[in-house]
Length: 89
Image 1: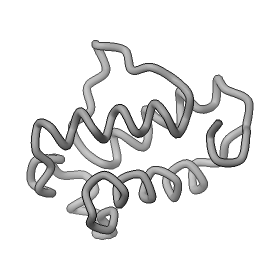
Image 2 (image 1 turned 120 degrees about the vertical axis):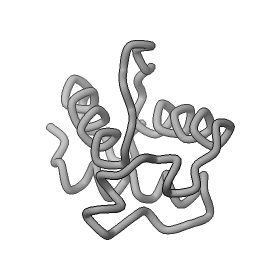
Image 3 (image 1 turned 30 degrees about the horizontal axis):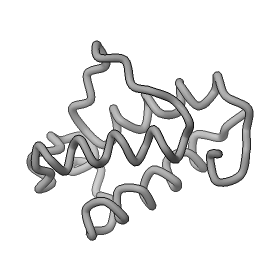
Image 4 (image 1 turned 90 degrees about the vertical axis):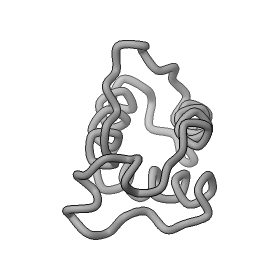
């Protein structure tokens, strides 16, 4: 099973790879809009694709990913359905 802290840490690494910026650490920033963190539409698609690659699942088109915290909750929930494999693969 995947640990929430491990998922959040791995998600932070993916965030940094895609955006070139560290993942938000401030609780207000983490719960705020991804767009307020400087994510563009193209960056959003790149982020979702990178998360799929890292964690080995495909997004449901109905998933509402509005903040880093919401993204982490979705990833943790989907990752729980996958075998726990180091590196997400």
